[in-house]
Image (cartoon, rainbow, N blue to C red):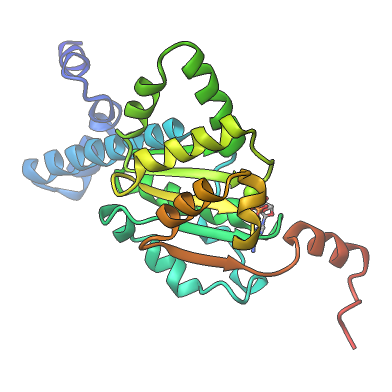
Length: 250
Ligand code: ADP
Ligand code: MG
């Protein structure tokens, strides 16, 4: 059919998919041609936006997609829900401000970081998620292949970078130096979400260099939103509740 060939050529797949059904509906409801065309194009535009959001989420390479809507804030009473939801609106991205999430393993830092970053993807921002140890390996390899500058320049094309599990594994001197170089390149250029289990006092030990640590902390905390996750591992607590469902009852 000629019409379908044209719709394919013009790359209007959602119009192609809907035009017949919408025509039947319009005829039955006695709607105008304008109304019919508007409804069809609205679908096409909405579908394209959805596809774009999905592409951005895929490109961000989240280890697992998590949303703020599925986060149980009551499990982390010290975390201010209103503040997190306010951050999700994305003003920190426009201002290129860092967010630092500090807390023990299992308290939901990666979940909230991913939730904020996924919200950013939906708002149209280019996002990339890195595990800190994985990033160091990528950077070492890039350095060996003389393309470290290219890697850093590619990173700067994003509007939000997530650096997960910073300090989880102690760095080698090279690793510490590379992470420092990475954060310096991003400083005031790209918004950065860092998750870490490190208390500020422990940073020097993990980075192994006092001067470098001070400079790194200075960059990460300058104008930063600091979210403290205090509590027990969420999964651990759930498991305890499953094992002893009546434990908390009088
Ligand atoms: P962290 O990064 O702090 O180690 P995660 O974000 O990886 O913790 O959380 C561990 C698991 O528990 C994930 O599957 C996460 O979705 C879930 N989780 C943690 N806290 C919560 C919470 N408050 N509400 C819902 N799920 C949670
Ligand atoms: Mg984590």
